[in-house]
Length: 439
Image (tube, rainbow, N blue to C red; front, side, top):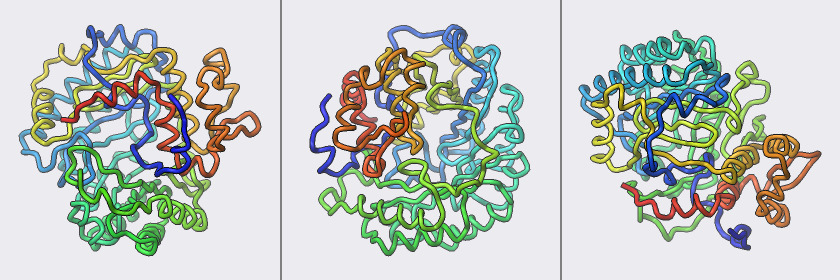
């Protein structure tokens, strides 16, 4: 794989790069793995538990997540019953383990009823001995579903972080990407979350929306900052296959780099520190939530249809899709699974030593703190610059730098994080992704 001047001259916005290998590299495995065998030799003292609830009140035009809008209520009930069966089997297959962090996402978890939200937390407590009162726990919500009753459930259960996708405080901007959103409702939801005194509020915003300007983006950022959220994530708009935006506005001018720079400058001047290309955080806020879990080194356990799990050498999940009928079909199959079906892993990707090294580097350097060169050498018995020569090229074009033994992105490298990450993918993973046919 070569790094060319395209990495310097062209738009860096081609695809998100924040997990590796990407889910589009997953395939049916040559032979199934038994959960107990798969996890028997793994480090399990600081696992991340992810619970996937694939239901939303609407499907945004840019969304390619594994979720279905407005499912039948019977599907939700059947889904939670299957989730409990899976939780029992997975917890038993793990053996002795400790959950260090937890996230409940989707979809929109607060689309569920108050009763079913409680049921979800009860399942996690029963089988994984984990409560939001004891470990850092994040839950996703939306302006429409962040009602006082549902936010009270999160507060009462001890959730310490709520992430809400606002995207823009200007209705015409979100409407242009197929999102029917009332700004009055957005403010109501944010007020509700703040009045519940949850420790950490994150607000997601998007830059690069149709007809968005620097002024309109700064307006949205100003509105967001008025709630003093502990975290703000800014995402570039990507138009992915099979979404309702696919093929639209493909020739319009790309102002995303300039919008990113203006947003970054605004947030830094507002007192936020940059953690990654997307994440900005108030300093000294939420320090008590500092994770024991380390995404580069520790495993992740996912339950729910579409949830991913990570061991050191195998990443796996159930089948993935974007189109509504296909998503519903996969969820229907999931709800009919018996306990024995959850005990086998047959869909994912094996990571050889090269991809394990690349994952460690990518997951490290895309964070502002970077990667300790010594930490890599201890883990992989060698130099990352020798193991992954493309890193030297990134140093040459000044997208990376070495500072006091730390390999980290430069300011320009940070704004091109997605491109840097993709450029470090192995030929094998890149080939699998290119051959993936979205469904």
